[in-house]
Image 1 (cartoon, one colour):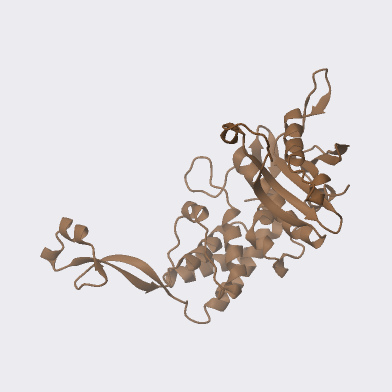
Image 2: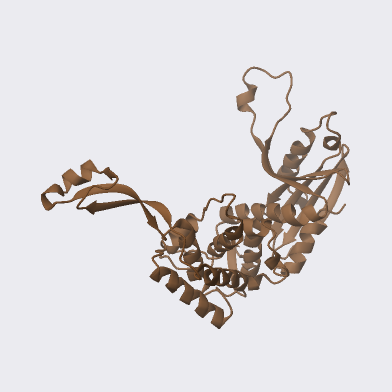
Length: 364
């Protein structure tokens, strides 16, 4: 996929593929892991496939210096002697006994493990995405080597949907590699026709809204931490109601914040709600105004959390953070002892400016 190409998200809203990759990076566990290899990649997200390719190729070279570590995996096979548990239904329905066979279910050691399949699939995906021809060749060659050793990767679509690999305390060395492989699989987009290809020109609004929220949370969780901010992602908050009637509890709508940031040294707490719609609407008497429904929403999030026992709640801030293209807004006001901000992140800008916009939104 050409990083200079565009992805259409809604109507005529077009976002450069490189910036889509930037959001995927921010939303990934690979970014949150704080890998030293990420140095500089935020400014040049078009290099992300090459970075991931180098990590995986180096990993495969290291892993193949010795035999791949096998794991036990559930296996079903028709055998001439009993092994494990007998599948009575299959044995009877296929009349296997008359042929001297019995259907068995058992655990078998194999190198065709979820982890090895994940790396194999990632190499296959990265081969056409990397800019370096030599790296592309190495990705394809290593994928073939893993296949020849018995690693049978699932179809691309299935692998993209299921990239979950559980880690244990003994997986510190493999963790960065597997997180890189998982991110690599997320760089591709199945096409609109559903034929299993790796390209498409559109992205659903719901998909992008979720990605933008996760990317903002991931970015603040890493970059904000360096500035003293602690990030808490999506959580339900209470209305803190009192003197309620018997049935009101089940009738009150749920309130769920996208994220909140807290900086104890600066005595600041910010409740953030991300949006992928325009921050402005046409006013009743002409001109443009902030969308009232969104302001009411963030106002309710902030004011319902006031608690004299929680000092930061009495001065907490509310922020509406909108994804946009070609629009730059950062306005704020105070009411009732709280500051409210409406800001945009222009995803049509270079990656370096996107980072600055996200950091700038935290400035008073």
